[in-house]
Figure 1 (cartoon, one colour):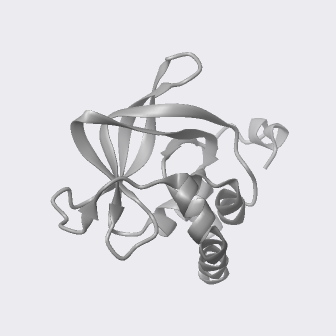
Figure 2 (cartoon, rainbow, N blue to C red):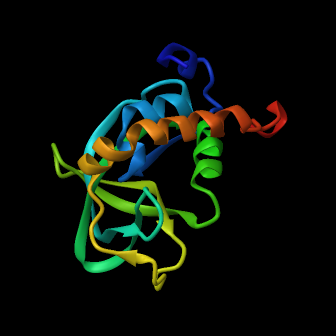
Length: 159
């Protein structure tokens, strides 16, 4: 959906989403949303990004002395939020958090997917995006394609 069609749909809610893991990869976002939204580098203070035992994607949990780098995706539609909510699954809760933009230090309220179980014993160590891209991106893209083939969009009346 281009900006002209967004302007033609004033009733359409637009959202901002902080991403910090596999959704940092434009290849993954493009498969899910069928576009690459405008984005900006950002930092989420008082959270930590962790690896999850047996998984290739990370989690974030609140930790006072830590911070997570990532980016904000802008102008995410309700339909796209539904796709992201379904993709992130029940182990994450969509929460409103405050992030700082890297280029201006402006603070914004955005959505982020936070791991539901802060005490999960499977959370450990740091998760590295560049290492993940090198080792897991190709297989992850296949998984995301499979997800989208099975994805059931919302009926138009619910969007």
